[in-house]
Length: 484
Ligand code: ADP
Ligand code: MG
Ligand code: ZN
Image 1 (cartoon, protein in one colour):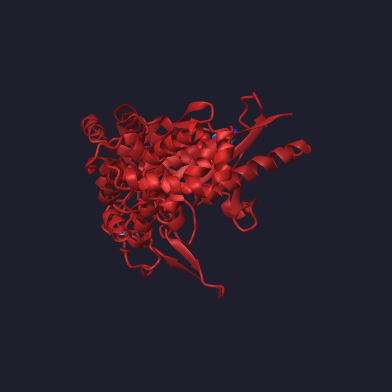
Image 2 (cartoon, helix red, strand yellow):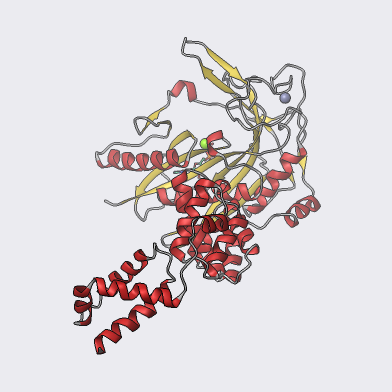
């Protein structure tokens, strides 16, 4: 029997406001060096008698996100208490939303091998983050409430994904949207975005929604991909051996590469949701929604379409450039600082080719690459013929490691291209005289030797010759020898 996977994703994204969801404490990204419990007040510490006050900015950013994800924003939204006991949750309940979430019925389009696919978004609701526990190794645990009360948006998809590739396409696109919107830094290492994956399998072609496993607390795309792949395989194996799948909450064991059932008792939730009596229903005026809609920035899909239309890029290249807002900005900034008439397509190739490769090699992001003004200068030097393309690539490598400008490197190292015809003619003649066997073979029909001879000439010039000119001179001299 052939099976197919059914996957729905719950994504928790922090919303980067200045202050927390219901109190004035600052929201600070977890860089690891902030002392525990620096930003805590009676409200986020859950002291009796305190009252929450809604952060308008957090609601605004959440609505913007909902609108970008094509959601409806119902006129009334309600906060609810989700009760459970855990030491990182001082109130004994989390303020969340249940029956009337802020955003409903949206979607996000993803690119798959079969083309564009629409993943429906059921809802996106506001909640507050919990604190963090540190297990000390001597058996004791400590709690840090810096994160308690940070606004979170939980974005819940329909079970529309069918493979690991679709899950990753969806998660990365959502990530990209949040960063474009300025809602979230996108810095996964700092835990600003976390996933829960719901996975079931069924015979291919069936539309059954079978019992699912919910994998909790996935903090990276890698863990998401690996755990979902593992679940799909292991569920299929269970069914093939005549077993049954029961609905269950799983944890991901990164080191062993397997999911493990979480202890039923500890996680058997009865959240006893009820409307939070401290927070009256939130009325959201249509005027406010429209104002926020009008203020949405250009989002990845629109930017990609514009890159294809205005710069003549392929859908693939445009997709690579817009995936990260910082990269798309880098590209456009480079374009705007060019002095030469280099093609936008050529500039895109520099970035998706050499710049990406060197970022990889140097283990840095686009902010660690030479600034756009310097890349523009380098491309200009290639465009106006001062250096050839290969030298340009070498220069870029040096720009990455030394931080020096293209012009400085070219001048100091004497890399300017040799376009002096007389000088090149002499070098070509020397090379041909030095390799009589290859010349004879070439002239008797072994035409692939042309590339090799060309390589010898380039080598003799330390790669600095203008390749087009070398090609012409080489052709001419070989032909002359044929007739001579
Ligand atoms: P819960 O409150 O238990 O997390 P939800 O109704 O919020 O349940 O659903 C959680 C997620 O599970 C959603 O993303 C949904 O698409 C997904 N889901 C629901 N049914 C299935 C299924 N049979 N297989 C895979 N995913 C599913
Ligand atoms: Mg869930
Ligand atoms: Zn506080």
